[in-house]
Structures are given as C-alpha cells and as structure tokens.
Length: 486
Image (cartoon, rainbow, N blue to C red):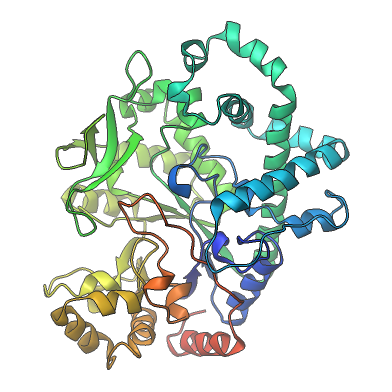
C-alpha cells in the first residue's frame, strides 16, 4: 500500500506555553493529516531530553518527556487547580530552560493537588512498567546531587550498594512518588492521543536511538550490559567516522553494548525495550541500524571520532531473536551513513524498509542510491530528515552542480519552487512510503532547521507559529491523490 506522512516533532506544535504538547494542537495536527490523506505522523524520540536538550540523549529509554505533558488537559481533567496555566509567551523557538522551570512548577502543583485522586490508576501503572522503580529513584537522587551525572555521584551510590540504596528509597519516597506520578500523567495523555490518531486513520511513527545516554537510569541500573570497566566508567564510546556531516566524524559519547553478554541473556533487555516502543508506536525507526551490522568504537576520552575502529555487531542472531519474540513489530531501518555489504546483507535478511533521502541524491554519481529513479518499493523516501537543512535551505547552500542536477531531476526552476518539486518527486517515486518534514511543506529555509549534527547548542528549538492552513491541507490531499497515496 502506497502511503505518506509528515515528520514533525511534538515540541514543534504551536501549543500555548512555549512548547508543543500532547493536547489540543496534537489532535489538530492529526486532523490535518487525516484530511490531507496522510496516514503517518513521524516524530522524534519522546523520552526525557538530556544533554543539549537532545531527544537522542535521554535519561531513560523507557520514560516519557514531562515537557510534552499538556497543562490545559490536566486542568480540564481536574488534575490542577482552576486557573493554573503556563505563563510563558508563545514563540517560534523553544526556550527549554524556561519551559522546564515552568512545567516543573505546575507538575509539582498537580502532584500535591491530585496524586491521591489517581492512586488506583497510578498503582496499576507502577505494576505494568518494570523500569519505573529504578528511573524514579535515579531522578530523585539526581535532585539531591544538583543534577550531576551519576558518574560523579559518591562511590557507594554509583555502585548501587544495597546498604545505601534502601535508606535512600525511604528518605526520597515522596520525590520518587512524584516522578512516578509525572510518568503516569504522560502515558495517560499519550494513550489518549494514540487512540485519537487511530480513530482518524493515522499511524504514529516513532524514533528509537540505538544507543542510550551515558547519564541515564538505563546505564546506572544495568551496568553489566555496557562496556564499562570495574569502576563503571566507559571503556569505549559510540560515534561515526568522518562523513557527509562532519570532517571529524561524530563523537556521540554513548556507552557501547556488551553484545555477547546480551546474547547469552537472549537480548532480554532489548526485547523489553522494543516491546515498550511497540506499545507506544505503530511503526518504529531504529536510528543507526548500521550499528547492528558493525559499529564504530572510539576510545573513551578521545577528542573526536577520527581514530576509531569498526567491530562486528550482533547481526542476524539479534534480529532472529527479535522477530521470534515480537513478530508484529513494524521496524524501519535508518541505514544512512557508512553502508557496506554487511549492512546490506543484514537489511536483506530482516526485510525491513530502509531510507532514501532526496537531498543526498545530487552528488553527481549516476549510481547514487538516493536518486529517485532507483528507489525500491520497500523503502521510506524523504526529502530530508531532522539532521538535514530544509530542502530550500539545502538548495541555497548547495554547489551549483548539485543545484543544476536537483533542477534536472525534480523539474524545479530554482529556489522559488525547489521544495515543492522535491516533495512531489518523493511522492511520485516507487517508494511505498513518502515522508516530508513539516518545514518543507511550509517552504521554510534554514531558519526552520531542527538539528545540526555535531553541535551541542541551539538545536531542537524550531516551532510552527500556527496550525497548517486549509490551502496546504488541500494541496497535500491533491498530491496524495495524484501520486496514488493515502
């Protein structure tokens, strides 16, 4: 079935209070997709953000992001005193520090006001989420440590000595309960949104990073799964070598997995992680799929990613286990970057759709796999991703040769219509699924860029200033009809 969708992170919705949320505007965006005959809403990871406010550096791979909780919905549901609301002005850029402070104030107020009213539901929620106990303790301890990384905590807490943790659980019981309450609110709103999307015929397409953050409850609670030394310090970290995005490569810094130990445990942690993601999303993009075939290892403490090495990943054995345990899971492989025969062979074995990105097509090589005439049906085609500039921004900064080739392939005349023609080219391709970032649909330039890989500050902030216009909905509906998608 030929289908289409839009890539837009929840934070980019024009919700009141300085950040997009899971409330009215999220439902309005689903209405827009449904009316446009788009069946997929793709978003970035929805977990709590960490370093640089990145959704790809989260303190938990299982938890939800409290900043996405919709405050007006809490008030409507009687979980906040009447009249309480976000006091921040609307903006086209998210001020994460200001939003975080204001939302924490309101969520703490909600906890004091309504925790006793949701006791039964919260108790059931705790029973159903195995990760919650460690995550809430982790967050409560971070408060007492002035939010320092757990790598800097006192030795006995870092090493999870029982004689210390048990008293801390008792001492921090109220704050532990608060963090559980916040997660309960998040998933209550998330489930309502998912049900609304399904009623409108829209699938939720989520993003799951292959790696977890060093400063996370995952690494603290399960250090045996990661390449740590006896003191639970990273030995090697993740990244990619020099590539299209960066001459120094990308030094992500995430701890690497002990794949052999995971294999002996039948990848139980991964199965639970994927099962959790599958309960939230209808489709899951696994970021950096390449790392399952072979992963790049960089010595901990290295200044950049220039001097690393490739090591074989878990490969077919891992995905054979996943497919037996979770046969209904719909996975899309982010297979961009250093694709070699190992990666291609693993992708063929799994049968997952890979990704094609039109912005990558105009390098001049006739065998470039991102040229639209070569797309297979079993792929997801994009104009660009969250890591690229917008299509207009890309064109304005591209070499003249690439611009000329882009015009030739898409039929565009120049920057005034390049985004429109790149969108229609992706939709007209053989790819079963076509996805377009919202910024391209709005015709934005570099001001709409979401992320610049390799930079730590100023990313993830872009927001729409209003819901999409009816004229955009009609033109997208017509494009879906003409390209036989929907």
